[in-house]
Length: 476
Image (tube, rainbow, N blue to C red):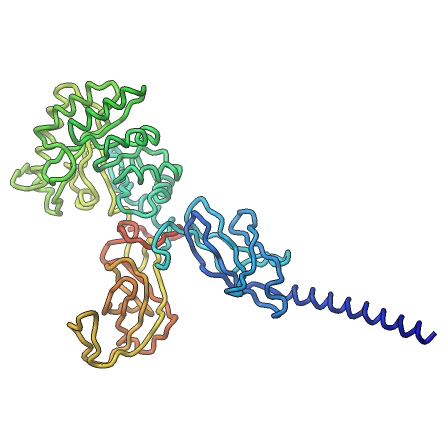
């Protein structure tokens, strides 16, 4: 009996121990929870890795299953990485650059992260993300539309704006935009892919070989020479389609377009082609000024703007005298013409770019751009500044370092105070903290583009995302 009892007790002990271990394991696993993730942003094309830091019992690390849900997408399966001791999820692609919620699912338990994952446009990977405030941009576009006479069309120029497709979509949703003007076929395609169905004019020189893309995406190129018109017409003979073109006249800027003396033969060639339609006649003024209005009204040809208008009007009159382009849209001026109220050169349409993107004032910008100080130190007197040591510090100077700022025309603010930029090598920017000597690493730096400029109207290469937040502000 004693042996049997001992055996029974041993079996009971082993069973209880196994049960306890099992319960303990569950307890350990259940204690696992995510602390944070990095990086917090990436291209909307997806495929980048997100590393999730997990808090829990050391024996549970690596034993949990993980899935990640980005926005409304189906959860993606993740895995544990022994090298970094983090869990990893691969980011799925997304339809547009915008913040989305991120939920981390550990062993079936879902945790919603406090911060969103931010999908961005292409840009320098390490550069700070720029947030475009869509609501404020839309209010600005509405405000500009109201300044334009109802009989005059609005052509929104997305010459440098990034990302062009989604900016165009936001503008078209805000107010009546009759046209979009873009610098390239690629930008026009981006608008179409974003769902914009407004007419699109490709302003600058477009090689005739792009004709299939122009036709497919319904883009209207600038006709800039007789040879170009003939080549496009030859290619169109293979199709039953018709291409709308805008005859561009160079009236004194020495850029794209035919000279006034060459315009009529080009207009005739367009008119005679069964495959081409003269949709518009355009020029570009070189030297608009706030004092041009009285000169235009007095028709003073010694004024450059008046002279350009005179040359343009002569070309249009000669073309229409032959019954050509009677319904063609005349367009010539840009934001400066509207800002200065130069009504004699409004014609049928205004091409507005800068004015759409201009910030209402320094305190209410249509974008937010910030980074953090990574290093602070005090440079001793006599220390070299930059290569070659052509300059040196005249006294001990506290400085802060920020990195990967891909634009030189930036004003830096720390604690709301503008600070001087001592050195800009793009990958490392040195800021003078003499007035703020107690600033520490990790503090935020706000960046503002110089004067009236904006990331919406420059070619800088930081990643951009769209933020749909309501803004109650006067857009002027």
